[in-house]
Amino acid sequence: MTKALGTKEQKIMDYLHEHVFDPILVSPTASNSLKQGIRLTIIRMTERDAVGMVDYFWAALKGTPRSVGFAAKMKKEGFDRFEEKFEEFRDRFGNEFLRRP
Image (tube, rainbow, N blue to C red):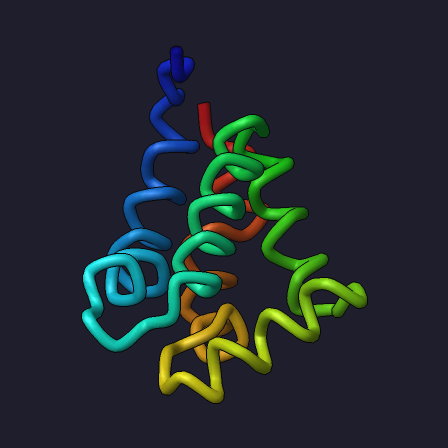
């Protein structure tokens, strides 16, 4: 059973679903491995609070061995990556957003 997300967490996930996740998940051309990676990313993110979700996003941008390869796969298949969304994500979900009650 999936836990209910708080308001901030839901806003972050709604944004990522609209701009990164769903275009891949509904695409008839996205590879199964890319879709599976997105599903795993969604699971990992929903296990975190808002601060953890933002940290996860920034860690993916900074690059781990896994995130670098996955981002390259997203780009190769023609999809937006976190990298293409970082400015808007930063503006929406920065420290001011996280400090709000």
